[in-house]
Length: 355
Image (cartoon, rainbow, N blue to C red; front, side, top):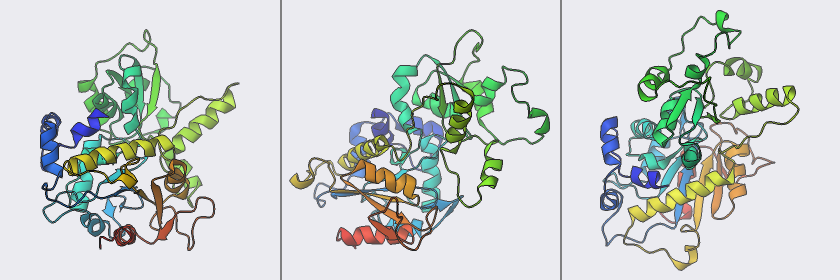
């Protein structure tokens, strides 16, 4: 978790990636200065917010539901973070600092990499287990670069790994398109080539869903958006069909309660750096926050995850993504249902008497 704490000091959107790496080494006092108000500031808030991204904040690469205006209300006029918040998504495929810069541009506020939790962010916790083992990183974007930045030393992207085996893809002769992946070029610079014939692959990490397979599957299910996790379901189904024993796997994305516990821990560190001179009230001391609001669009993932996580999580369901119902979801009902993320923030601030 130290990587999340140090990431609080990373630079804003105008800085280069090299500058971001320098910013990681800033002292704790720098973190406090960046996020905190003066010693005379009001007591730190007793609540926090976790936002899903796709279908709540953006659709494609465009903001939706008044998200820029809603998020800006959670920042002070001088641009400092006023309410502890993070973005909790099962998506990914790029480093967290890259997504933070993208969101900063779209929303017009300074978002720290520590405020971004991808579905693969918990892989950081597995570095000690696989640090020196050969692993394969699967997915669109830059999966091998992501895993390398987490600290894994011997990483191959699936494209690199499959290149060792001639005719591994029987459909290759029919694929005449070129996928605009950047990972192939970067992986050759970041990772040395490994002898996959002599060294066994010890783990396969799905960083994001791959590009090629999903088109026809999604076309078969046009009524429902297939998000992160669909590739794992397909892989599991195929594996279990051709083997006598079921596939063993661990899923780290929402609705796994571990993800919400991890998010709460990050929010606690965030608020301590925002308000270093404030103390937590006795009534919320056990959890640091009286409430953490999960704002999401998917009942099965976002709302179900908040329900499983329990106190202090509270769920708000928007109608801008997967869920479009008039009433609450019957299987995974949220605490509140609203139209947009702007409505969600209005509800939260009104409930917390901060309008």
